Length: 126
Image (tube, rainbow, N blue to C red; front, side, top):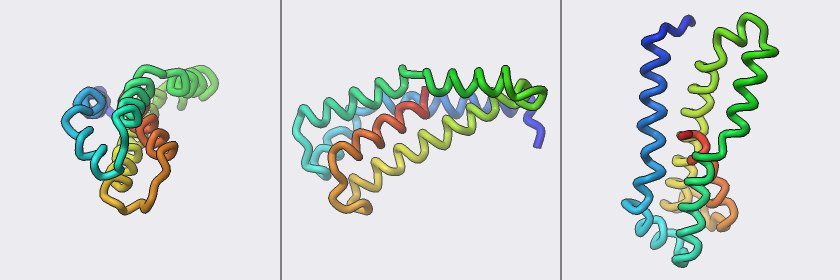
């Protein structure tokens, strides 16, 4: 499937919509805190990891560099589209896992695992 410039632009806008979720943490932090029985410090740690994940773009940069430089003609053509797809997948997986932990679908999720979910969600929205 060939992505046009318009499709790439649309995927970019979709990723930007996801990246705003990190900054709306205060809207759902109380529900997350109540459902997982977190302290204020733990809730702030989750917010910190969401933000850190969105600002730490080294893995994405390395993937783009690997695809662009060593991927041959295919890699140069599809590098940005692959990163969009990876970003959307990471963001979706991270927020879906946070939702599953908060609603009890993942029973007794340890705090460190919730932190990993938050980092993955933040990293996908960079």
